Structure formats: C-alpha cells, structure tokens
Length: 508
Image (cartoon, rainbow, N blue to C red):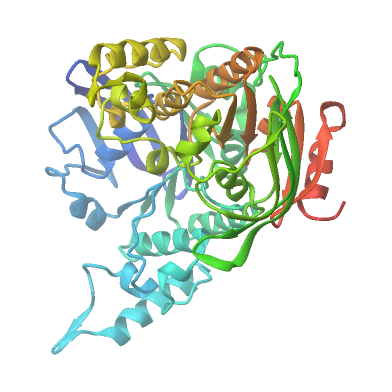
C-alpha cells in the first residue's frame, strides 16, 4: 500500500544531565522507503537511533513511538528485543569478527542447532540464501579478514537481514568505501527497497541523500527542522536547514600568499616495513611552499595515506629518493623525530590514531607535547592547562570545560582537538589526511577557515581529501597520485575534476 506508515515517532524528548538531546521530535517514515536523516554533529541523530535500537529504553524519554501499528516499548538496553522486532542497524564502525567466516558472522549468537550441536550445513545454506536473495556478491564461506571494506559492509547488511529486518538503519555507510563500492551499495539499497525493507540513511554526504533517498528529515539542536520529499529540496536548501543560515560559499576564500619552498620530495620509493617485498610508494615528486595548501588527490588505494605516513616517519621504509626540508636532506625515523623537525600529521582516522577517547580534552591536546611542561621528571599542570586552554580557544572547541572526556564531543569538535594537539607542537608543515571525514557541513566550514588562517600565518599545509570538490575548493595546487606514484601537479588555474580523474586513473 503506498505511503503506509511503518514508523511514527511522536513528540519524543530525551534529556541527559544538563543537555536536551531531542526536543519534541516527530517523524513519520513510510514502509519501503529510503528516508534520509541529516544534521550537524550534535543535532540528535545518534540519540534518536539509540532509542530505536533500545540503547535508550522505553521510559527514559518522553513521547511515543508507534512501529507497525503498535507502540514500541524496548526494555533496558534490549538491543536483542529491537532485532527480534525487525529493527537493525549497520554502524559506521563495522562490528564483525575478522577470523570468522561470513556465515559465522551472520548467525553469530543465533547459530542453527541440531541434536549434536551447531548445524553448519544449515548455517551456510541459510547465509547463502540471504546473500543470493539480495544480490550480495559474497561467498558465505569466505573469511571476513580477507574481504574488502565494501564486502564487509555487505556482510553487516546480510547479518541484519538474517533477523528479518523490516527497518534497516545505516549510519554513515560510505565513509570508508571506494566510488565503485558506493555504487554497489546504492544498488543493494534499491534492491532492499524493492523487497519492502525500509531504510533510514544517515550521512553527512549531501549528494548521496539526493541520489538514494525518497524523503529527508533535517535535525538541528535536537529539533526537527523539516521533513520533505527529496525532490522538493536542493543542496543549498538542505545546508540552510542544517546550519540555520544560508552559506553562500562552501569553501571560504583565504588571503594566503605562498612563499619560499620549504619541502621537496624527489623520486621517493618506500616499502611496507612488515613486508619489504611490497612497495607502497613507487616514485613520488612534490614540492611545498610556506603558507600554501597543497592538495593530494587520488582514488582509494592510490598511496596517499602511505605517502604522508612515510613522510611522518610512521609507516613506510624509504628505499630510494630524497626528502629535503628547508634546503637540507633529512631522514625521519619516527613521529617524535618528525615533530622535532617541524612536521605534524592529523591522521585519517581520528578515533583510532588521533585521540584517547576516554581521556579529557586537556590531556588529548597536551599528549604529544608533554616535554613542554616537564621539569625534573614532573609535569607543570598549570602550564599544561593554560597551554591547552589557549589552543582550545584558538580553535573554538565547544566543550563545557577541558576536563570532559573526548568521547562526549561531536565529531567536528573531536577533530579540532586533534588539530589543536598538533598545532601545540608548533609545526612548520601540517599534514591533514581527510580532515573533514565524518563531520557535518557547518563543522567543515570552520575547519576550512582554520586552514586558511594557519596558511596565512605561514604554516605549509598538505591536505589529502577523498572529496574532489573539497580538494579543488581548498588547494592552491593539487598533486595527483595513482598506484603509489605522483602523476602530475596542477596549478590553481588549471584544476578541474576531469583533469584530476584523468591523472588519477592513469589516462593522462
């Protein structure tokens, strides 16, 4: 039946101590539609999803949720109850067991039994039946650790569908996927839709919302700003709803004036230190000037992250070529060595490599710079606090105070903490690997303004980005990589998406 409502969220309010996470939220979601939910970090998206999964149980919030014509009453932390009811979620951080097969992961904790134990034939047959039904191109017997990220995500979807999911929630599902894997995911979602599965699609990537969703709900500060058919919206309207103001330009124009060359890389080759027969950097040339933003573009697997991690002394073993800093050839053996030479790296995955989430904002900012506050084997805690506060204010980190844990901050503010940590080391060169990954448009704009400000102060910035619009919008020049090699560098006036893709695919 067209427009049959499967989920009716009515006037839901959820409070935490000192914070109203959701305020009077009402959303109607139709059966068999793909419904997008977007908003800035801290808008309330995650809180709403945790209610739907039973992490925040019935009774801990005001309002009412009707699901399939009955009130949804999930008990305390009863995630199993939500799954049994047909509500499943695929998280941004995948939750698979790498050393198990696809089939074992799909039925983990729910293995079919017979009189002697687990019925393995039925487990793999049932898994393959699900994979075939939804055109998920995976072998039920494959080890998960041998799969690419895209197929791991297919496994997560199969796991959800094995529980007869009526509603599938996808949280930032494409954050680690290649373009080809994103295309495949879109095909899978369309197939799920044709089978009557309702999808709730959460993402910061606005083009994806317009590509796949039927309708979109925008949350801001815990409130519903609008729910409209996707066809009635455009990117400009969506951004205005999300941030509460019209953003006339997505990429702020800086006043930077690049100066003298500070870094030169000549025919650099490097191997994986754990597998020295595997060359990861296969010939890279680049040069970087003071006060410049040099973009590095390329497809997934082009060697961008491997290159900057090698320059930072934390990954590849250099076998050939030169790295010249301020006219002197250098060798960087570790992150500590790189910092001493004035090179800092904001990593691609802030949660794994950039932050200690269970530590405070202050401790995270000062963590890489404790030698600045150490005297006679003791730390001057007042000096540490004052310095951390200075950088927190400079980056406008939004936190009640510096003692709160980093895990309580929004993604954009977590990223600012990582940047603050490396700015405290007083770098000459700041490498930023996908600095706006997983953060909303408003927070992205603040990061862009900060990058302009740092470049205007004379800091040389290398920025990797998986988003072509971003790398074009923020860079003075762009070096393009393919299969571990530099394919060419484009000046500002010669940059366009077509030229970048020609270089990235080896066609130019």
